[in-house]
Length: 217
Image 1 (cartoon, rainbow, N blue to C red):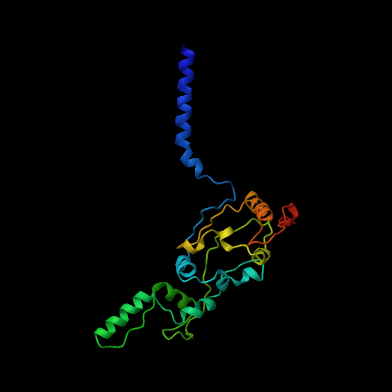
Image 2: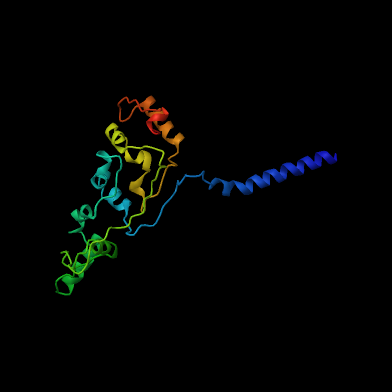
């Protein structure tokens, strides 16, 4: 009788312990797994706005993905293709235009604090001309997706095959600030290749490599 009671107590204690540890253990990552990594950036660039609401294609900014191993971060000059004209959210500009019309005066130029950081990095003055008293400085973006040095990854064959950017990077068009969606582990990549070989990509049959030498030279 005593042994049975002791066994029941142990079982209850075990269940209670597992319940307590379930939450913390679920957030533990294996070494090198940065899934969920969402670092702050020097400029609060919204992918939700640009890729989502405005539907700007990923390759417009990250053109390197189709021509080199690395997708890369767009040069500030690419940002200026739009932001030489777009200096603040449209709602703010329209509000100033309406207020200026009401007050019978010319509208004042509006520059949002985040876009001002872009102009400052390029050493531009209020007229968006180079300021000779300042030197352009690179924007210190924080890299989100990193692979170990012993792994070789090339964006080009993936883009050429028609792999959607979201397959690896998640629904970036819904992210205010980009975070790592997948764990980028070897098993994660291999399983994706196996699925692609079985079902194809964009309606086309593919032969994605699953041997070690494909990623580990």
